[in-house]
Amino acid sequence: MIIASLLDTDLYKFTMMQVVLHQFPGAQVEYRFKCRNAGAAGIGDLAPYVREIRQEIRLLCSLQFQDAELAYLRAMRFIKSDFIDFLGLFRLNEKYVSVKALPSGEIEVVIEGPWLHTILFEIPVLAIINEVYFRNTQKLADVTEGRKRLDTKIGQLQANGLAELKIADYGTRRRFGKAWHEEVLRALSARLGTGVTSQFAGTSNVLFAMKLGLTPLGTMAHEYLQACQALGPRLRDSQVFGFESWAKEYRGDLGIALSDVYGMSAFLRDFDMYFCKLFDGARHDSGDPFEWGERMLAHYAKNRVDPKTKTLIFSDGLTVPRTIELYSQFKGRCQLAFGIGTNLTNDLGYEPLQIVIKMVRCNGQPVAKLSDTPSKNMCDDEKYLAYLRQVFDIASSG
Image 1 (cartoon, rainbow, N blue to C red):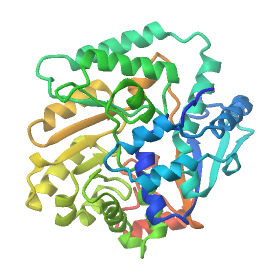
Image 2 (cartoon, rainbow, N blue to C red):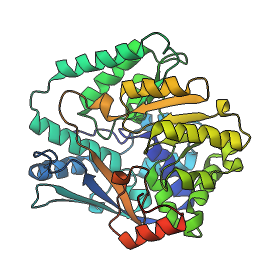
Image 3 (cartoon, one colour):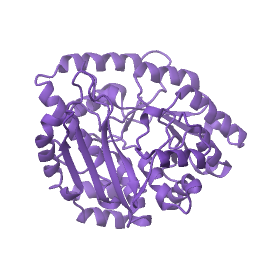
Image 4 (cartoon, rainbow, N blue to C red):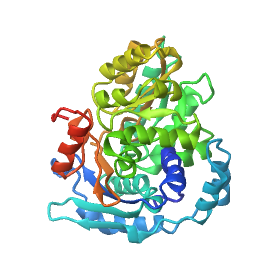
């Protein structure tokens, strides 16, 4: 059984789910799966494993939150008691998920149903697909090579002048496997520390945060702001509506805004002085991170906000060397955080699967993001994408 706890997911799923419960309980959504490296020398050919994936999803849907897990969530200052009461009754329902093999060797995964009852599928389903794939294709995993690579990364982080550089684990969805994920976290916490002055800030994975005494990290994901395209009063105001709805729920807590649903220029147009002051910072997830950071700092200064009081989080395909480069450019100019995913939890010498599950519809209408990295866009409705670009004044190149 790959997923043995409903806490084996990212914190931002719970923070978004609480907003859904309180503000959008009737929203209906559809998510779809995509493997970005499918067809490359057989990598990503998942069709042979459909039966195994379905069986693991069936086991996932048998889980309920345990009392100790609910108590752990309840202790978080931003989690409300009625949400815990709801989770106490919650189970994932297999009827909302479809997994099919395609003639191409790829698979089709569709998650469709009430947002409140489907939001927790994404991360564990991706983790299941990864682990099923790798345990079939790498029956004797080269853990020695993985440990060697991890040792190199930790050594790079421990170099002189990097004592204040903090990294976090964001790698649940694309991990090689659950056991390797835990080993990586134990190594990082043992060698980089877990206290306030340590270099290991924590993990997005709630189960391992609870189990290993780490700090759970996360705020919002793209699906939240995408859904607001269908849930807000009008499309042009959907990003502002999303940020205001978030602030209404959390009253200044969890104040990291995601910046790349409509591209950086559209984000900055909406992220005015009010949001600059209200939110603690912003997260980068596509486009050139160095350019993004400079634009954010300039934007704060323009809005009479001291950048040193704000946090920039970098989380797009990071490696340790790239993290060190970013730290060197921005240290002392703002607060910094770095979320490393695949390169931490799936670096044993095999090509990792570049897999995602993205929301594509909400309340019957298309939703999309217009990423600063065009390959990250995922919407097959070209008319809607064109309309979105027009409404947010975005060049068609993405």
